[in-house]
Image 1 (cartoon, rainbow, N blue to C red):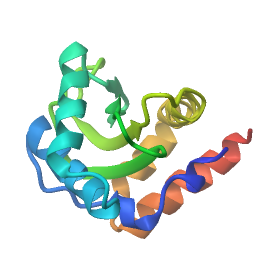
Image 2: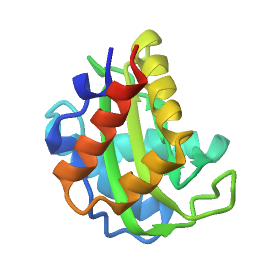
Image 3: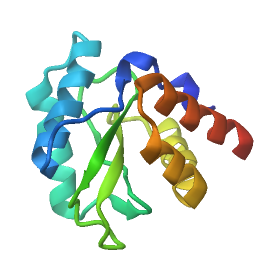
Length: 155
């Protein structure tokens, strides 16, 4: 399993406009809902905000991984967004968050959900990869940077 298996270009936004956690999560939730007719953005946003209330998913190096389970969902959905300016997402390192990997998974999904979390965490540990993602100017550039780094990490 690789990130590219779950990340179509339609679920990448290298130019998020939100300046607060809720506005960024709203943009990403809308993007997810637009790509999947069985979802509405409010429902996606609600489960992501509920998860954030348990503790920030800002893991450092400018990366956050908001993730949650969603009843009735048929398959895992991954979306990625980039905030050029960065926002305060209560990250573990106290630094602004620029890259948001959002995972929404069915309630009974464990393997794929955890595998994606692990693969994304591996990317987040590489400062050069994080800087390259933050510098990305287009959706294609951001997606390619992620996929190339994930491929280098192997299985």
